[in-house]
Image 1 (cartoon, one colour):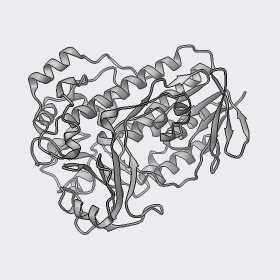
Image 2 (cartoon, one colour):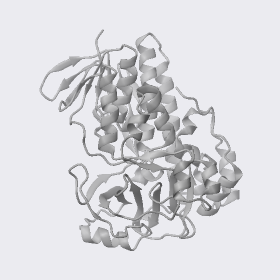
Image 3 (cartoon, rainbow, N blue to C red):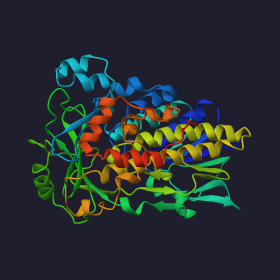
Image 4 (tube, rainbow, N blue to C red):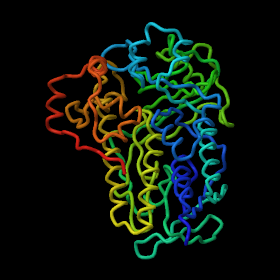
Length: 439
C-alpha cells in the first residue's frame, strides 16, 4: 500500500498521522523545519486535552511540563472597563470571589493549559513518531502532484518524488494545496495583524486566578492578549489593523497604559525569539476542504480570528475528524469526506459568526480598529451567544447541538456586551442553528 503523505508536522499533521498509524496505515510525514520550533498560539481548551489523551495518551506528559494552568478567560470588553470572566467550570464561576489561589488549585475544577508551543508541539510530534509515523524533519514539500484532478504524490524540496495513496495538507498558513488550486477566500472584514513578544516577571490577575487564566483587553488600537505560559513568562500581543511599526519602547508604553498587568515585566527570549514579532491574523477558508486523493486540515483548511483563542484546538479537533474520514475513504466509503467537510464548514462558520458578534458588541472603545467594525450588526449573528462557553471550551463539537447554558452565565455575557435582547431574539428566530454532529 502506498503511504498517506502528510505535509506539515504541527499539531494538526501530527494528530492526524498518529491516528492513522495507530490503525496500521503507513504514514509519511514531511516537516519543513524541526522540533522544537517557535510558534505563537499558546492558549488551549479542555476538550482538546481530552482528544490528545484519547488518541496519543499524552495528558501526563503535558502535565509534567511547567506550563501554566488555564481555568478560563477574563475580559475587559463591552460597555464598561470592568473586567468580567468566563471560566470553564461553572462551580468556579460561583466560587471565584470567595476562595484563595491555593484552594482553587487543590480542587477539581475543569481546566486546561497555557503552553510554550514549541514544547507542546514537540510532545505531540514525538507521540506520533512513537505510534509508528515515518516522520522526516528539515524536509519540505515543494509541490503536490496531480493526475487530472487527483493528488497522487508530492515533490520534495530536494527533488525526490513520493507517491501517495492520499495527500494531506497540514502546511499551516502556507496553504499549499489551497493556494495551488486557488481555493482560499479571506474574510475581508477580519483582516488584522498581530504584534507580540514575551515578557519575564509580568504580573497577573487578582486572586485566585492570578496567572491561571488569559486576559483579553480592548484598547483603541485593537485588543491585547495576556497569556502566562509558565510561572514567570508571559505571551503578550496586540491584534490591530494599524500596520505601523512599533519599537520595543513604544510597545512597552502601550502596555503600560492598558489594562494588562505588565508590572515589572521585561522582554525575554523564548525559543530563540526575542523582541517584537509580527504575524498576520486574517480569517480565511478554503472553498473546498477535500478533493480526489487529498484533504486540507488545520490552518491549511481555514483560520479564524484569534479573539476566541481556538486556533490550535480547532485544528486538532478537525484533524481527528479528518483522520477518521480518510480511513473510511481508504476502505471504500464515498461519503466520509463529505461528512468531514460539512462538519468543518459548520464549525468554521460558527466561530466566524461569533468573532463578528464579539467585535460588533464592543460599544465603548473607539479608535481606528473599532471604526472598521462599526458595520458589523449584532443581529446578523446566527449563533446564540449562549454557545460562547461551549465554543471556547471545545465541548460543543462533541454535542449533538448547541446546548442552552445556565441562565446566570447567559445573563453575565449579555450584560457585559450590552446585548440588545430584542435584536438577539430576532436574529435567533431568523437563524436557528442546525444540529451539528461529530464526524
